[in-house]
Image (cartoon, rainbow, N blue to C red; front, side):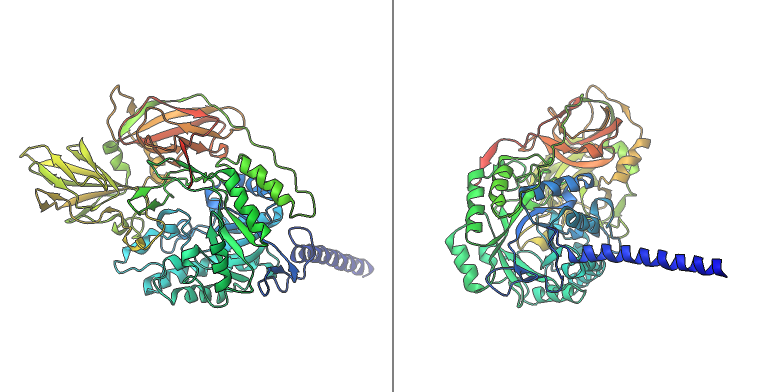
Length: 634
């Protein structure tokens, strides 16, 4: 009995010790700010005076945007530590609905899309977080981050309380918001504020929409400070009762400040997006903002006592087919790189802007800033020699079963991906013709189509080219249109009109073509992997186009970052070990694709290039990027 009592006493002491340790950890986590100061965690970020306060003490937001979905997960910590070392105290990030819910009922919050891990990492590094969950986020993403399957509804009105859109938002928020509620400030996490939608004042198609989004967040447990974000023109229409308005700009002028103060007197002033550079479109030059101009704007914002968020602090990469497009004045697709001429380059290098900002922000910290993390080595690898070839036509058997339709069907309404349609990539439309003549697209090709007769290339349809001549011939021949979604528009009032593929009739001698066989070629990793079983041939002296080109890249030891360059190639997509790095196109401005070391294996790596028009026998790897000829932002 005595032995039994001793054992029970030991168990009680052990249990008490465990509880004490857990309690201490929770106490430290729940009560300590990223900066190390103890906090009660009852009030949070407040805007009840001319300055923000955090737990009752004056707090200036020194923010920077880094998007987890544009950075390899292996580099999240590196980028956030470099942010902390620059003097940033708050991370801001969007949440891309389109990536997290690629199909109805299918949600991805793992690996590169593990939002909870990213937010927890920010807290560990010592950063507060402003979350920008949308549902629309712009961010130069395809359809502004909205999933393309929404467009299967012909009556869809995006960014409104249209029943189909509101129901889809509620379903997404039912999955997303419970993941971030425990990460709010008052619950011990780093999230100090949440933004409603994004720049809605410039859209403003439904005056009940923003209150709906506010209620959708709060009813699911969001109880931190709410913000809106608009440019000057949208400030008036983009606000919501009880929500702090912030402004987006690049160059500060007195009018912006006066206007925001007039709309929202006696409230904290914040520039939610101080644009540190800009994005690029294919066929344009690479946009850069002079470092002196950027730092001058930041310095003046801080001098006025305002809070600030740098968009972007680190841009990253639009891997795969993430990029959006412009529609005004004409359609232009955006490039793969999202370097943005930001303070931290696409590959995480320090720029002159970074050093100037670090000097400036250090003046707003009472303690010495952390040391700058060491840079990662970049490598010039031996070229990958392309030694095998597979024509597009031979690869069709590895795509999903083709779909037959009497009329053209747009990409989003194809019966693929469990009834969710096709989001990205290419779609092949084939039909039988028995004559030549004039082929007219009527602007129904979105966005670009290579046209073939019996698999021989005859021309291209794009926004400026709406008519082609088909060679004469009375026998039955196959007319093929390989249509590419080059990127859905990410901003403006044309979002509802972003269906891709063939969106209407194609006319031959003014008669609509009928009876199509349609192949979905979304170029997913599963499709690229399936090509391992394809009948690859030795690379011929004159390969056929479009086609896939296969080569090998060799690395030794721990793989380093590098940049893929394709001199002598035309337009297409690059895949490394099945991962879609993004588009390449000789028209630039971008001439290299960023290839992060974590995407590589030590030893042999598979390289596949899908090429539309011309190819060399190798691709090269360089240690420095080439984003093209630069032009100053005016």
